[in-house]
Length: 371
Image: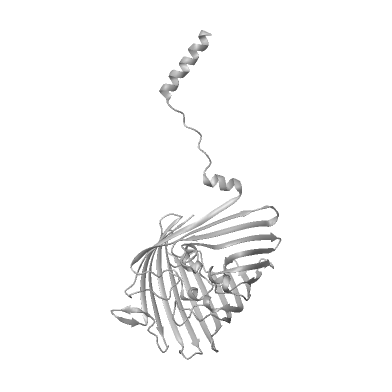
């Protein structure tokens, strides 16, 4: 008995000198998600934008002047279930969500869909991003800091169903039915007609990919921008709208990338006639070193208006220098020039020193964090 008391007393004294013992660390968020089969990824985008013009027009997201902007926290969670079933949710928070939502909200569910895969066939249903275009909503997926003028004209998201079938290693096809073509979250509910989407994806070589995409259907014009005056919308009416989009990606070497995006848009106008737009954008991406890269973009857009407003031509050139601080953090510095010509009133950009301008100059410093 005495021996037991001595041992217990010794243990108490030792504990007093050692102090409290650390508890085992609990599971991290990554552990919890990994154990549940949920994958989580995303990015953060913040910038400072400058312009000598009184305001920035004709842009999608980078619309502020001489101001800091928290553009987006882009978060995606997905889970795969047994039997080829899956679910994906993509949420956008920040200034950019005000555009994608169409209602000014700083939180928007950009994508939310169920998926099913069986062999070479995959199906998704819900809300998802468009098949058209070179550039994407997620800032981390683009070469440049700003979005192109073609991105301004292209659809962003759709609600509907989409099927993709892989024919072989060289080709796949996609076909879908959507509520609308040029719809935001808010406007998507207004459209009463169905838009058809189709895409042919080709990979003739490991370093070359080609995507030919088409959209066609009647569109509620409240979801279509008046392309002659960026930011304005046409009168409400269900009008025929067609889009044909071509994207080509070529990795010439590990350090040199070339890209091409060509578009044709045709939209009926209220009162008759149609509005046609042809556009092409070229991309060059060059890796200068393990840390530095440069990206060049040059585009030309021609808009033909039957309503008597005349033809409009837009030229845009952008140069972006990027520095990879780490594998996850990249800093970008960009200079861009836009110029409009040919229309009856081509002074569509905000004034410099009091008079409207036919050109616009902007500069951007941006930070993008990926995880």
